[in-house]
Length: 201
Ligand code: GDP
Image 1 (cartoon, rainbow, N blue to C red):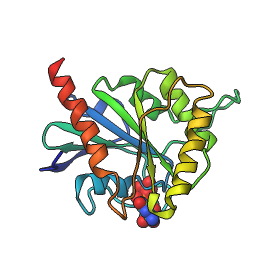
Image 2 (image 1 turned 135 degrees about the vertical axis):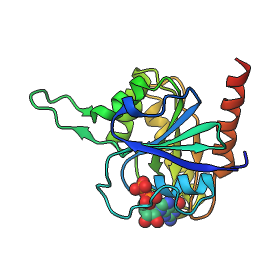
Image 3 (image 1 turned 180 degrees about the vertical axis):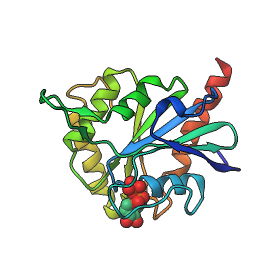
C-alpha cells in the first residue's frame, strides 16, 4: 500500500469523543519506549507524524491519524496496570479497556513488543485480555536491527512457546525495525488486505 496522505485528526482521553465515522481503524499499542512512534513514522513514511519520545510518561492520549483518507491509524498510550484500591486484581487503565470495548470501527490491534526482551508478563497479560474480550490482534516485534537473525528466531520461538500454552495458535506477527526500514511493506499489506476484504463483505 502506498501512503498518499497521513493527517493528524485528534487527540483525546475520552473514547466517546473519538471520531464517529465508521471507517476501518487499526490501533497500535505497547509499553512505553517500545518504538511505537518510530514504527508509526516508518509505516507512514513521515518523519514526525507520531512524536518520538525518548522520555517516559508522555501524555496519555488516544491519537487518531487518517491515512489515505480511508482508514484510521490509532496511536494508543502505553498500557500499565491501573491502581486498584482493594482487590489485588490487575486491570489495565480504564480508558484503554474502554477504547477496545467501545470502538466498533476497530478492525485489529497491533501489540508491539521489543524483540530483545524475553516475554514480559504485562505484554502477555494484555494479549490475554484482548483474547478474552474477542479483540483481534497481531504482534509487531520492534527493533529487530538490534539482534542477529538467529537471536530473532529464538526470541520469536520463546513467544510462541509461551503463547501456545494458552492459545491454539500463534497470532500473526511481524518483525520490524524502524531504523532499518524492515517490515513496513508486510504490515501495510496486511492492513490493505483487511481493508479490501471489508469492502467485499
Ligand atoms: P515509543 O515510546 O514507544 O513511542 O518509542 P519511540 O519510537 O519514541 O522509541 C523509543 C526509543 O527506541 C528511541 O530512542 C528510538 O530511537 C529507539 N528505537 C525505536 N525504534 C527503533 C528501531 O527499530 N531500532 C532501534 N535500534 N532503535 C529504535
